[in-house]
Length: 472
Ligand code: FAD
Image 1 (cartoon, rainbow, N blue to C red):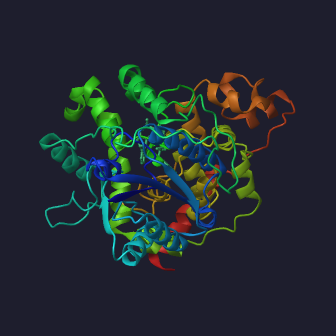
Image 2 (cartoon, rainbow, N blue to C red; image 1 turned 180 degrees about the horizontal axis):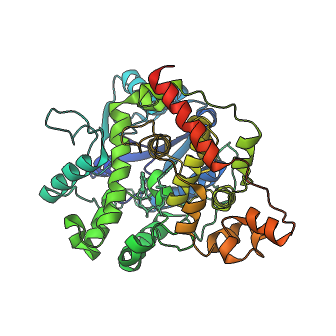
């Protein structure tokens, strides 16, 4: 018998449910497959940095699998629809009896999997809920409905975890065939790539596991205090690994509980666990409401907001030239590294939508095109949260003030100075309002004046949301 494991966003050998199941029968021949889909990625705005991260992990995975006697074949199909023929041909050529894969929850991915299963009538297909702690649809209200608000979802989720923890599975043992010679030709993927910083983002599975262990041992104790301050390296930076499945959320949970068992009951580590549950919340939501994958707001009336055309102000936002230091520093961090601190994601998203009155979907798309951790569920959830169009959204009249957010979370302007060297001469007291200092000191700075007046922009946004809600 030949078993085929189709890798997608689960690029690891440890605790991989599909791989574990495929390897259970000791004498089965196990093949692994990855299908690159460049045209589909283009349509989904995959960031070139994420593509480079993916290729790095595919190369590492090919080696680790080969060392266990499993060859990884990397093929190309332009779109998801083209995957069907690729898999069909492979199954025929290798006489595959069973296909194992881990579910993805986005709508195009689900449609692809249905088409593949339908086409493989002679092959037994098995899917697994591997990228989540608890399967979508399994954490529901008393009426068996998906929660629309995070806190009750989280409480129900924690109750389930306290009853029973999802298990972690070991990496499969060496196959009977023995280790394979490691292919000396690196994986080639025909998609634009932009180098990522391998010091900041682990380039293989082992380094990701080491980062997770180090963070749980040394980072968690200060996480609650530090996590909102972008000048401090206070979060795990594991999001790219979780997005591509180089780590599983079960590994995160077990590592967390090993160092901080009190996390399940509100002790140290509980806040980090809560972030992992946000990730689950958004995955459960897109599964229950697939329209969220199709650019639809959760709150219908918000589709009537009269957005402004994304023009020069949008470009200024993208390039970090709005004249609001915290917004600009954040956008420059994104453009330069492919990653942005969570507090800053909230600030820049709020600024785009509520200060510039530009459609949140423009921001969502731009984020995807830049993020090394770009993930439809989390990104869409984050944008709809910031735009007050989503399930558990901040009410639309709650609008971040970009200046006070900067004062609160980057008081001395350390983060700002790092990303905006043009502001290095500005005194700490004026770092969040350089335009006032420029006027007073009568100095010229190579840095723009604010492109909007926050107070007026706020009023215009409230009026636009109000009109949309009343249908006027
Ligand atoms: P940590 O603080 O160490 O958290 C641990 C893990 O929990 C993260 O790696 C991530 O997997 C998960 N997590 C944390 N916060 C959230 C959250 N609010 N929602 C969902 N999962 C969360 N996250 C992505 O992974 N991909 C995205 O494309 C993405 N887009 C976002 C867009 C906006 C507008 C906003 C506000 C948030 C977005 N997030 C996204 C969530 C969050 O900003 C990142 O997950 C986080 O900054 C990653 O850094 P970290 O790994 O150090 O997080």
